[in-house]
Amino acid sequence: MLKRSTTVAAAVVLAAVLAPAAHADGPTVGSDGCRGSMLSVTVCAADGASGSSGSSGSSGGKPAAAAPAATGGDSKPSDKCSYDLVEPPAPPGHPAWKGHDPKDGGVYKVQCDSGRGGVVFVPKGQDGPAAPTIDPETVARQAAASMRLEGPTVASPRAAGTYVVGMPMWMWATPSPTTFGPATASATAGGVTVTATAKVTRVRWAMGDGTTVTCHGPGTPYAKTRGKAMSPDCGHLYERPSYEQPGGRFKGTATATWTITWTAPALNDGGTFTETRQTPFTAAVHEVQVVN
Image (cartoon, rainbow, N blue to C red; front, top):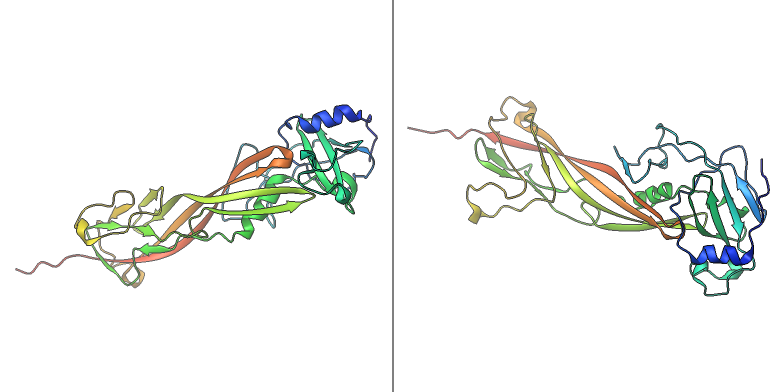
């Protein structure tokens, strides 16, 4: 279902390469095989369904694209895009090549009916301009998956500790690149490279007693010099003991929200999405017995 589009004059195309590209999503090629390798083609395309590779997630800047191995979500309307090979090609070393050797592929100008567009490099041996029709957010989620992001490493409350009703509890996690960030990774698909940076922006502590505490950092480690003071940034006060709980302990969770920011320079595109990771913990809370 290909159709030829009017060939763009070389000078005009080169000018487009030099100019800043418009906002672009890489549309996803449909399963009907509507693609080609002509000088200028129209690709029948539709963006993927929304989703995330974490236990939950959302996107900022534009609707979420389909994550690897994720299903469900609302689909976005189709968007036809034309890919025009820049002829004659830009000279070696030109920014349009994105650091690639001209003998390894070609530079295409992308323009979609929605107004999206950009410039992409397509390696030789791939099926013409079909390769860059990858939603960059999908590639960003692949990059995020390679980071192997984890839930918080809970340092307090300690499983071996005993806490007291009415006494401040300080919660904190031990940060690392995989449990708090920042972590950075890149992924490439269809000649488009996307770089993603992930960091934890908040931790929601479900304390097991029906209350929750949201902290916007790893928390402050307790020091004996602080006495009975409350934590300055992440604390809780249990008002009843855990005797009646299974195992005599409150069972809670620390859920980290990872915010992933991604950029696709070749498409002049970028955005954010979130994923969550969870770590369970327990806390034994006793009452102080006063002896007369």
